[in-house]
Image 1: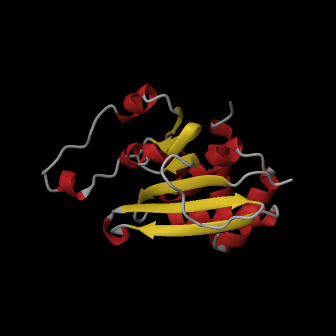
Image 2 (image 1 turned 180 degrees about the vertical axis):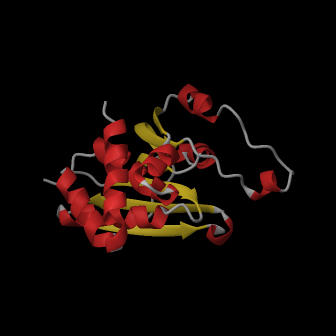
Length: 195
């Protein structure tokens, strides 16, 4: 019934809400009866460094880690992180990437320049790429901090799980005063990613 184990990677930089996104995703999958393993790998998350969360689900999931070339979906909260984790995708997998740019320390200090043409390069690599301007949608919903939930909405549209399950997980996971804002953000991401 559950089929093979599926692998989703949520990647971004510290402070973007990747961990909350993985918590919501995990809650949705658990509520649907899947065995779920979530593993968080922090870089310098307090300093805007790379943060990766692996979410694996299926009938019986042994390990929480996703090896190179095994991810079914990479949900990238930032352009450079989308490029960095490209090798993790299996052939035919999907990359959902936020247009947002967060300058890493070498760019901030002037030791390097932020690369241009990242999305063109990803398309050139033959990736099934969906680009989302999650920051604009989050601001439309009412807060820049809702970028993570906008991106979850885009991911949810690609998954075969009932929308009601996502809404229930949002209500359960997000502080009550932020539920309405996050429901708006989720709906905007969900609607933008039709097709």
